[in-house]
Length: 148
Image 1 (cartoon, rainbow, N blue to C red):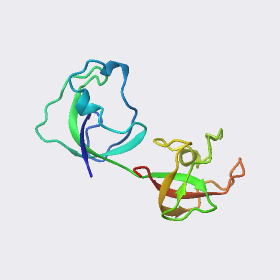
Image 2 (spheres, rainbow, N blue to C red):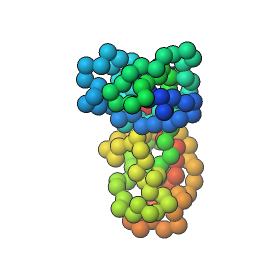
Image 3 (tube, one colour):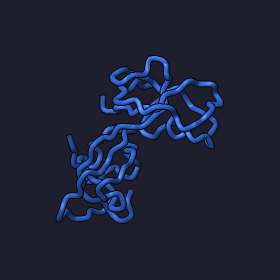
């Protein structure tokens, strides 16, 4: 189900994904707060439609203003512990990893997730892109539902 919100004009293009960070200091006193701050913080969204004929509104945070768009939360690809990982089960991320050059790093610390949360696994995607985990973790690449 889509939600109508305001995003910076640079993000206002169908297919653009972003992680909503919540209210910023510049939002205080803004007349458009209720239309802008209606998403869940630390959640990844995809713009599904840009409202036609919507005007660009001034914004203290976006130098080129904001526009009305429709967004939907998106699932996130992540590495989770392989043991007990199957579609429909819940899993948590293993924790931070200092090996930022590893091809799996973006899946071990995916944007829009929290290490203290459990997420439902939508789909098993298979082996992670790394050959060896330097933290000796047994991981599975999955698609997580962050809307649960």
